[in-house]
Length: 428
Image (cartoon, rainbow, N blue to C red; front, side, top):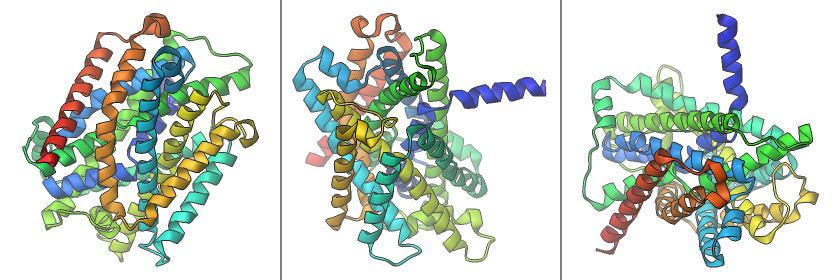
């Protein structure tokens, strides 16, 4: 019996890949700060958004993964081949804007948390992380990099443990999770859109599809043949995606809880610096000497770990899109000399993101605004994903079924309503 359970566990571990990495990258520095800000500002009032977004997140990422497996192409290449160039350029332009801003704010967050320990100039840390990320992404083979990325997800467990320590009223937590609390004011809608935008983000769609293709190419390099598309392959991708998104949203749920129970309960309603955000983890180490410093270290590890995980994904998803338009060789499994254009876009995009940090914007506040931008830009991208996944000429027998379409359409309508409400309040 024990051997059977061990064998099942090994099989599950074996299928974990793009879905798990995508799920963990979803809780990037922007996500960590946005979820914590939601808890700090509104207590448990936005906890329901995590449960609300979960089925839609799983459905959309499953669709993107299925598109990648069946077509062996990324989203940009499919739009280029099957739809108008105008649509292609609009979608890729929106992706580049979202990714560059995400990338820049995450570099800024990593630099800001580093200054909790070493009082070097902010710009020095930003440049240092810029260099580290590029070196890892360009010179470390994809398979090794993917293994490293999986282990960086461990840093998110600090929020789960802290949540169990600080919560004394699980009845209230469960009520707030299952019973939506809606407030019709600008700040509430702004942050709801931010939470949804940092959960369902444009780069995740492109990354998931492209990485399923890259997984197949890695298989080809090893076995000298492409794997046959099968129901089993789709099922493995679905399990990987399901587990990755569940992991992501459980971590997000606990981030809102810790923000509520540690910050909101103590009169801190706005996160304006890294030290405030770090204090959400202080209950985890309260019994230790120098608990503030230890909490800051845990927060820094989480931000830097997820930043190292997410920033290469922002840069690579942009690069996949551009390379597919230009017809360049692409892929993180290729060496720099084999895909100069692909890596050139990664370098340029990361550099532009770095430069955004030299305009004096508060990095903690910028992370929340980035999440809101994601929420708005995701809307037209979901439309394109629906078009591709229901096109029999592209997907053959693997077009989306009723539930995939139903959940994707509800996600589209919900995010469109959120974006329009935000814009209506912003114009007032």
